[in-house]
Image (cartoon, rainbow, N blue to C red; front, side, top):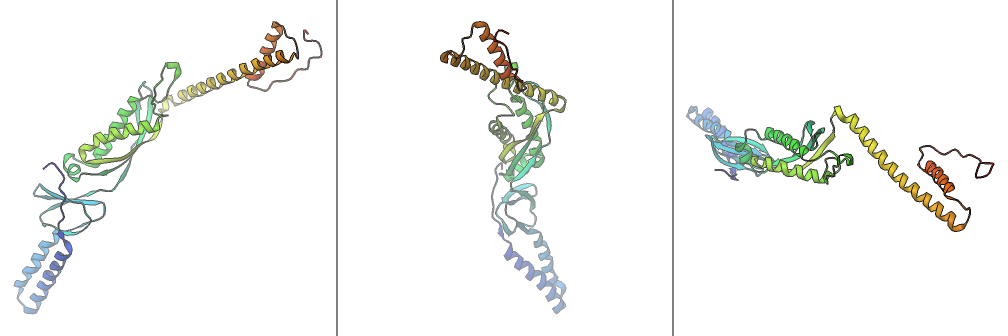
Amino acid sequence: MKEEKIITPASGYLMLFVFLIMSIGGIATSIITGNFTFIIFLVIAILIAPGFVMVQPNNSRVLLLFGKYVGSINKNGYYWVNPLYTKKKISLRARNFDSERLKVNDKIGNPVMISTILVWRVLDTYKAAFDVDNYENFVRVQTDAAVRKLASMYPYDNFADEGLTEDITLRSSVNEVSEALEKEIHERLSIAGIEVLEARIGYLAYAQEIASAMLKRQQATAIVAARHKIVEGAVSMVEMALDELGKKDIVDLDEERKAAMVSNLMVILCGDKDASPVLNTGTLNQ
């Protein structure tokens, strides 16, 4: 048998009543009558006792008879089964798994630290019990393997100076990466009858040995981008100023004076510090 078989055993309350009658009745009858042959009912009651099983909500019991799979009890309640059955408990509740931070290389070889948060539950008790040795350890090992594979498929971030223009990166494409991770883990855990409810990146950062250098690189990239926008704005403002001066005939500037004005405006608009005004008491040529 390679599939899960759901069974509903006999009610445990009826057998509990029989157990109490046989155990108490056997002892009481033996004492009253003085005939200890009635103690056999107590022995039968003791043999019945191992057959009682209680299944709580979102739990199950896998039943075996001398190594043969009999079925699984997934419905909560109080039952009685063959006392010779071996009863293995498997939880059907959703569980969280927060993996350790792993050091892996991304697509372009940069070492990164990454971990994942996984929400999972057992969907098929037969596969969880018999298709893998230890399904909880199987979840841990396969999740780590899936995270390592995922990290090697995408770069941590895009860098224009390397000509890297990936659409999906580990840092910026959170939803896409999580979907790919969930699919990868689901394919690995399906052999154990485990359903993946959610998989998310829990921690992501450059490894310690390159974190400082990458931080400076990101800062430099941000500064260059900001300077680019500042220069674009400054050129636009200088062009507008020259056009307005020419239209309103406020002052007649030759090419040399225009160049000086452009130079002064660019210094003021693109400088890191506020400009210090200088009062010219002479002519424009002085």
